[in-house]
Image (cartoon, rainbow, N blue to C red; front, side):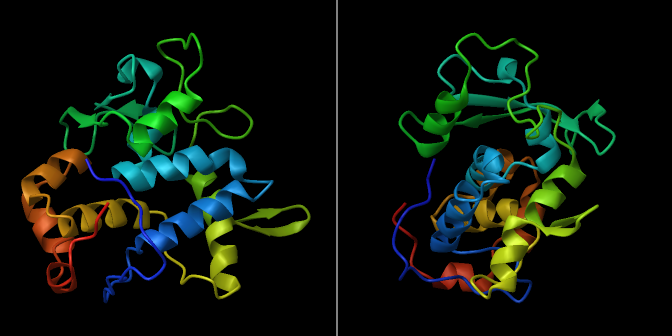
Amino acid sequence: MFQFGGSKEEPTIKLCSQKQVCRYQVRFWVLAFEQNPAYNHYTALIKFLFWTGCRHGEAFALTWSDLNEDCSRITISKSCNSYMINKGTKNGKRRVFPCKQGTKIQELLLSIKPKTPAPKQLIFTSKTGCPMRTHTLFHVWNKQSTSYGVKVGVVLDLANRGDIPYLNGYATRHTFATWAIASGYTPDKVAYWIGDNVNTVLKYYCHPAVSSVECPDF
């Protein structure tokens, strides 16, 4: 399994759909979350989404019983919708996401794992400890209306300042899949990791610009 790394000079794969970002921008976004006092609680979730390509609802539904003891395997078998109702994954299939020993994703999960987690304890929750919902992530990412006015989220704030073009929350999934393909992983393997089918991967993530760049050294 690859992991993000490298320098600011690495090439950005420019897409007409503007759905994914380069590795430098990923780190820039993560740093922005880490340094934001109002939203730094969500940094682990943002990293997880970028490093796994997991659908948001699937991440929201994950409990510690879905991980093995050393956090090297993540079983994804359910998703949480906007009404906090758990259901199956989008394609109805269970999959196991591997986390190689010593990778950033494994170290992240180990760092946030409680000493004795309850089996049904959610891995990712809101700042107040409630289950994550789609609108919660939207508020953190984009904006929310409050009694004091509009509170701008982390990514929209970066875009408003001209630091990085605005992309919606599913840029996390698109970025993982596109860079996995660019790193030389086969479409069938990427499709399994993200819980999609090969045709979708070939259609949306194997862009001409991806196949023409040098594979990054992750």
